[in-house]
Amino acid sequence: MYNPKCKDLDREYFPSYFTTRFQDEPEPNLAVLEHFVRVTKQHERDLTAKQGISVDHMRYGAGRRLVDVFYNEKTPNQAPLFVFVHGGYWQEMDMSTSCSIVGPLVRRGYRVAVMDYNLCPDVNLETLMLQFTDFLNWIFDYAEMTNVLEITFAGHSAGAHLLAQILKHQDMINPQRSKMVWALVFLCGVYDLRELYSLESVNPKNILGLTQRNVEAVSPMLWEYTDVAIWNSTKIYVVAAEHDSPTFIEQGRRFSDVLKKSGFKSSFKLFQKYDHFDIIEETSVDESDISKFLRNIRIE
Image (cartoon, rainbow, N blue to C red; front, side, top):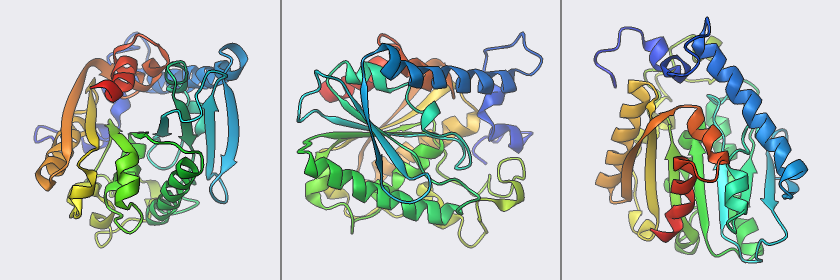
């Protein structure tokens, strides 16, 4: 177990139970989720209505396979590209709750791509992961077509899990493409699915389509990483929030260790004061700790 002191594995895999906010509410775990959806949707509406940010709506496949690319009138032609992958346990959330990160980055010269994806149970997790590799191909094609020289990828929660595939597919990521990737940021992710796939609360009626046979194949913690040398110019940050669950924090710490032992330039960072949700909400605030961290990656 990732938390040997755990007495309730279901709670360990629901980060909302570990927030220190909304403690005056009858059910803080529900209040923090409702707040997250409400404020992140408002952040998305404010981008075009109040912040003068433009958006191009694009598609990389059928269904929910969509990409919104944000910029403003000052965005240079060869602006660095920041790509964000949302969470939601592969079964909820969408682009409307995924744009908090956009404003501060666009104001500092980035072009920001926010992607969406088909959710379980419309697809199972193995299929979703294959479709995510289609997105990676698409975004690199887009970057090459628009003369982007530098890309940073970030994924949150289930999005961090999906993003790990970029390190595995040598057939898709050639040395030229890997050199474009300035940094990979894994935010509050889950990387070993062996404990969670049998939890009805997390995986109701096995909508993820996981079994003892295939769960290791979808767990980045357990993958063998080869051809690491092509990533020698890419910084990797595995981030956890202080008020996330002990299991999520430990999974992040161990995933960073796995990557480091494999030869990647990986580091682990525990952000104080944040929980699983406000670490994303606060990316909308120019001078928040998480916002400054994300934009300062390029100058470290």
